[in-house]
Every structure is written in structure tokens, then in C-alpha cells.
Amino acid sequence: MDREALANLAMTDDQFDSQLADCAVETQTFLAAHIATLAAPERLLAAMAHGALDGGKRLRPFLVRLSASLLDVPHEKSLAAGAALEMVHSYSLVHDDLPDMDNDELRRGKPTVWKAFDPALAILAGDALLTEAFALLSDPRTHPDPAIRAELVLTLANAAGPTGMVGGQVLDIEGETTVLDEDAIFQMQAKKTGALIRAGVEMGAILANATPAQRAELIRFGTAAGLAFQIADDILDVTATSDALGKTAGKDVAQNKSTIVARRGVEEARAVLNRAVADGLEALEDFGGEANLLRRLIGHFAERKS
Amino acid sequence: MDREALANLAMTDDQFDSQLADCAVETQTFLAAHIATLAAPERLLAAMAHGALDGGKRLRPFLVRLSASLLDVPHEKSLAAGAALEMVHSYSLVHDDLPDMDNDELRRGKPTVWKAFDPALAILAGDALLTEAFALLSDPRTHPDPAIRAELVLTLANAAGPTGMVGGQVLDIEGETTVLDEDAIFQMQAKKTGALIRAGVEMGAILANATPAQRAELIRFGTAAGLAFQIADDILDVTATSDALGKTAGKDVAQNKSTIVARRGVEEARAVLNRAVADGLEALEDFGGEANLLRRLIGHFAERKS
Image (cartoon, chains in turn purple, orange):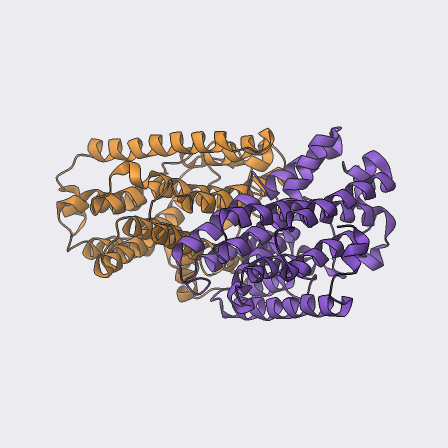
């Protein structure tokens, strides 16, 4: 299926946008309520809320929702798992922005957590968001079956930890001073950004008790979607403005990051992006029209402007 | 039971010390092997190992072991859960030592992780240890029953997160600039140090499928042990040397920390400590001689020199 076919899916942009916005609102509401109920110091809760609320399109919870609902899990049953994934994504941004890391003062058009509070509280608020994500996943209210809860924890921890996202962040930092070959760049990106995106799709499959075949196809889709997302991000970093992004543009070049764009230029990077989209669509071939939202989502990743 | 009775338990110091050392060695071996098998960047694994290995008496894994074996769980079946708890404790030290936090260069007689590597890697290594702890607890090899795995995750996440340890750290920082009343000091200490110690005892009870009554008694013991541990630590901070501690002594006074010692002096703090020990021993009254190691452990907390 090519881009034209993608555009012809029986779904308008408005329909897609409204589904995405609906998930974002529900995730936001869930996270705000969850954080507010925690018996914790006010300043910590304020810093956690600053890091986790009012930001982003909630693409990762949307992946959990779409993957789960593809296999007939109603939206409200995948909300907590999506929120836990978003907490892990948010913690990673809070720590990434720290003075000792990227030293970023702006995120989603707002001061970063360390800038709005202080670096010590930003470290602790990130730690708290990460830890609370696992408390949420292992809570019986998230799913009545403990086997599913334990598997959600294992999947997210593997995606977020040293073999996943954190490992990718270390490779990314090493790529600033070492020349990474293309394989190493793809591996770094698959871990740094791809792992959580793939985990979102896989967590949906776990919630739905998917067959091994369905789960494998969804994981393949998630892997392709993660790659598409990261390359689109790298392209935006060199083509968009900070205002459009709501964060500092041109950072990759300034920090000498190893990206496919830096290695091969924008046009060739777009070709890699298009192949990732095609691969993701192929992975969904055995699913019918009910997978159209996932198909649109990978197109959305490829075409996004921020 | 008073201190004299404690000293008369049918167990020599050597027996206690050898059990504690045995658990420390097995935990160390387990952690070293586990970290070495992770498919992650070498520098990240080195920083994680620096933060988690060759340090401390492994009191928290010992609590998991003693609590579990009190209810007939063999040592090898509680090792992974104890190691996961120790990874969380280790991550908290790695982050605590950061320049933006306590700015400590010495820990257990070695350079801290940020000093041996750099602050960015120390942040990421801490994040990795925390995340990997939950991967370990949710791994089927840790316990075959998913309900027990999910409950271990929930218990540790609640103890470590915003309502537990991280919340306590925020209160501790606030106590440097605000005058905390005694209730607030006890609450802060119960969260900052007490929560993980209590979690250790509770995780043992979970592994053993304890009855609600047994679990409640063990939690009461763990709460008392956590208080005894923290007050002994506060007393040592003013009475011991940095050499003896393997970390900087006199920090609480230098940082204007709110402690019971600062509020009431060493002698009254010792009286609170003694009451905590008595309460912990009372909680074990329904257990027989098989709880003697736990009884000795709370005495060890009270008497420790480092």
C-alpha cells in the first residue's frame, strides 16, 4: 500500500484527528486525576504534573488504544496502561532536559521541569513518574488478570530500561563524540525512540490476549512505526523552526548527533522513512478495515509537522 | 524483650554475621551475573555495576530472605526479589549523590558513580537500575505465579515512588529550609528510609504467600526496623568518622537536615531507637525461634557502627 492508497482509506482527516484528540483528552484526565490522588508532597506532585500534563499528542497511549481496540478491547480498558506508558515517556523527557543532560529550557512551549522548579526536584519527579508507572501497571484496577499485569510490567520495563530506551540514550550520547556507522545509528534509534513505540503496540496486544501470530504482526508494525517516527523527527529537526516544534530546533546538528539525516541528507532519509511506512502497512495486511486507524497513524508519523 | 534478652538469643554473633555475609555474597553474585547478561552499552553496564556492586551489607535483600524463610521459602527462591530491591536502593544512592542533589564524591569508600563516570551517565545508570528492578520482579524466573510477581511489583513501586521513598526525599530536602515538627520528621524518615526496609519484609511475606495476619505482623516489624535503622543512621552521622562510615560524616548538620537527633539530641534519640527495637520484637511475638535472625537484625540496626 503506497501513500496514495493510504490517503484513500475510508476515513477523513477529521475522523482521525478527533480520535487522536479524544485519546489525548482521556489520557490527560486520567493522569491528572491519578497524580492528584497520590499521598505525596505538593511540590513533587506539581513537578510530576508539570512534566506529564498539558503536553504532546499522547501518541503512545493512542498506540496502546488502537492496538488493543483492534482486538476488541474497549477504550476504557486500555486507558491506564496507555497512561503508564505516557508517564515513562514523560519521565524520560524530564531527565533528558536536565542541565547535566541536554540542558534544555523549553519543552512543548513551556519551561522544562528543572527550569520551572529546580534540577534536584526534576530528577526526583522523573524518578517518581517512572516508578509510579509500574505501580499503575501492577494495580488490579488496570487489569483483573495478574498474568496480564505482570506481562505489561515486563514489556514496559524491557522497553524502557538498559536494553531499551536508556541504552539508546547512552548510545545517542556516545554518537556525539564517536562516528557511528549506519547499523549503529539504526540500533540506537530503535532503542532510544523505537522501543517505547513498539511497547505501546505490544501492550495493546497483551491487554487483548492476542494470539502469538497477531502479537508478532503488531510488534512488526510497532517496530516500523518507531523507525518512521524517529526519522520524521530527525528530518523536522533540520527543516522546522523552534516555534513550530515547541522545542529547540537544530539541536542534532548543534550537538553533533548521529542521525540518518546527518549521514545521508534529507532526501535519502525520506526514502528510508517511506520504506518504514510501507513495511508497517504490510505488517497489518492480515487485519481488515478495523486497522485503518493504525494505518493512518503511521502515515501521520511520516507526515507530521511537529 | 529488652536488649539483654536480645543478647541471649540462642545464636552467636558469628552465626548472625555468617548468615548476613552469605546473603551479601549471593546477592552480589546474582547482581553481577544479571547485569553482565544485559544487551546494553558497555559504559552503561559499567556504571550500573559501579552503583550496585561491591557495596554495603545488603541488609535489604537479607530482610527479604529472612522474612521469606521464616515462612519456609528456601533462600534461592527469594534471591531475585532481594536483588531487585537492592537495585532500587542502589539507584536511589546513585541519584542522591549527583551534583544537583547531595553533590557527594565518596560512597562506601569509592568515588560515586557521577564522579567515576559523569553526571549524565549517573542519571541514566540510576534510571536503568530502577527500571531493571521491575523487569526482574516481573520475570517468570523470579516466581512462577504471576499474581505474586504483580504484587511484588506493586509493593516495591509503592514503597519506592512518590508516596514512598521519593516523596520522603522531597520532604527531606524541604526540611533543610523549613522547620519540620517531630511528626513531619517521623513521616519523612518513614518514607525516605523506612519504606524500602518495610517493603523488604513485605516482599518476603508475599513470596511466602503469608496469611494476612502474618503479613500484618511482618509489616509492623518492618516499620519498626526502618525507624530503628534511620535513627541509628542519624546518630552515627554525628558520632562516627567519615572513615568508619565509608561516606561523609556530619552531613546532616552541614546540610541543616531535620532529624530527631538535631531536634532532641543523641540521648533522647537513643531512647526512641530503643522503643522502636522493642516494638519490632513485640511484632514477632507470635513467631518462634525461627524468627531469631530477624530479632538479631533489628538489634544489629540499633547497634551498628557504619
